[in-house]
Image (tube, rainbow, N blue to C red; front, side, top):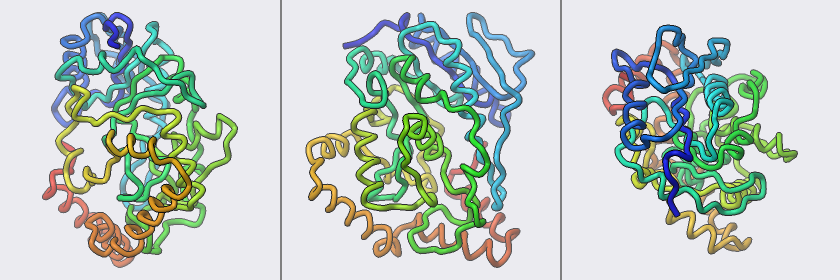
Amino acid sequence: MSIDSSRLAVIVQGPLKEGAVDIAARAIQSVRRYLPDAQIILSTTDDCTHVSFESVQCVTDTSASHFDDVNGNINNVNKLIATVANGLALVEREYSLKLRTDHVLHSDALLALMGDEQPANLLGARVSVSNLFLRNPTRLCYLFHLSDTLQFGRSDDLRKLWNLGPLAADFVYLAGGPRVNPLGTFQGYTAFRLLPEQAILLRFIHTCGMSLDLEHISHSRFDLFCAWEDLLLDNFEVHDWQSLGVTPPTRFLSAPYAPKSIITARDMRTLRMHRSKPHRARRYLHLLLNKYALCWFRRRWLVSVSSLLLFSFSPNVATAARDTYRRLTGAQRS
């Protein structure tokens, strides 16, 4: 079943520019071309006082702040929550699409995926997500890592998913400082307890009265593994990013972003057919094998260990090495 674009609101969220490129304008132009009757909302934390797009509502929240990591990176999770929630507050249509400003539509394929909702246990209907960055934990052990690159579904369900408010620092940071144990760690030297995607989903889970949590980014237990599978299967539809008619930034497909570690629509079909405890036990053993044994042959883990060692030796050398690695692999922002 397909819907008409007149039933859809598009929240174009994120920074206005990337380097010299006006990425917000580029994204809006693509929405106008392929979803001509959609309500368009630009939501940003940048100052958009002097920004004006015809028939586009613009909302800005300059109060949202970021978290600083000890390795020089920043975590924009509160800016992300603010821009999406502010945009959803202006939605007047039955369906909504969350689109990053650095993404560009090249077709209206999304419309054919809306209008035939499946029931959910924490939402009114399942919310659809792109699989880009939605990690398969048997390949890369990030539980509760729901991709936020592209989400769409009923507006009321997206409002519930993003009605979180700002996250406190003690929810995001590790209490004892950076975790330096290299075993089972895939994120390198960091003071953060959770990745932004994990923090958002876990906070949503908590608002629903569930007490699931993680000790650190790569933390795993069999019960948490099963709970993550259930949450994903019962509340979300996962689509291969190539089928959505949306072009992501080139850097998202570079080696540091581990594009081969994502869960696919085919993987989801397998999970739905094999939800028994024995099947899950076999998948969890696969996770442990990759996490603690085969990691010695995985680029992501080797880079993580190198990060831990270099930052322990010299933060300046580590930062320079990281920047060089990102530049050589195409992961550097423009």
